[in-house]
Image (cartoon, rainbow, N blue to C red; front, side):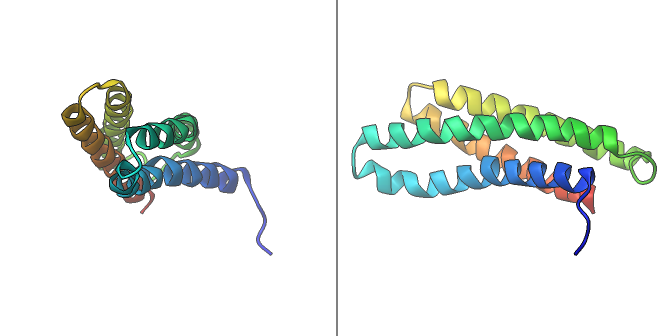
Length: 135
């Protein structure tokens, strides 16, 4: 059996948190139309419960992301293209968090739709950029 290292644990926690943050948003978006059949209270209850898990996952993503940055040294992280991609990813992560924050505080259905879509798109963008950085 392969040995477990801190790098393995760091990467596992980061991927697990990304699975919850990004994947959970996709699942929730797919469930909302069905949940609406049971009334707006059902959508609200499910969204609140998801938020409890999602924000914890977002915090883990940020913490393990910082850990990832400090753990990586040397090529390719020393190249200008890597640093630029990393900076873009960090900006997209911040946008994802802000969009999610605004989404859960928006009072109109249109606002929730717009901010929810922006949250999902930025979360997917951050995921893609993370895979790009790992490659």
